Image 1 (cartoon, rainbow, N blue to C red):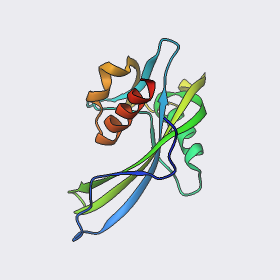
Image 2: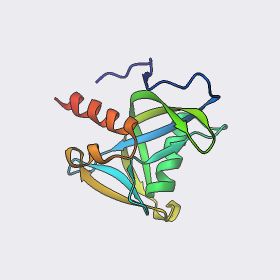
Image 3: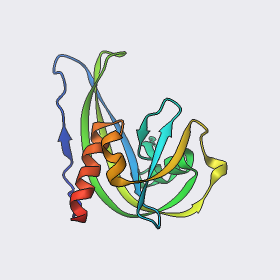
Length: 151
């Protein structure tokens, strides 16, 4: 699949509520056996490694930092795969949040276990076994798109 500069938009905001954007970068990493890197939280949530982009960094820098923090892996970005935005309702704040998500294909260059956050565990799993179990709709959508690009 060729990367489109135009982001895909999922969901719609509630027009009567305030809104904000939360940009983030997320990694699609496969090992030498074709298994996908996923993170599992202590509560059992499953998601791709990655997270929020800080004010002073690029989306690429955020990806590298987040993957070290969550997975303990230093990665090299191969290509930007897709940009997808999704509107969420945040009940605790009673507002809309637009998750602006950049997904990158990356490869492991070096394990960095000293950088890893203890709250998450890295697992390597076959894509077909895990895509429907992802915590976020946006990640299920992206993994479906990834599957289509392999066909």
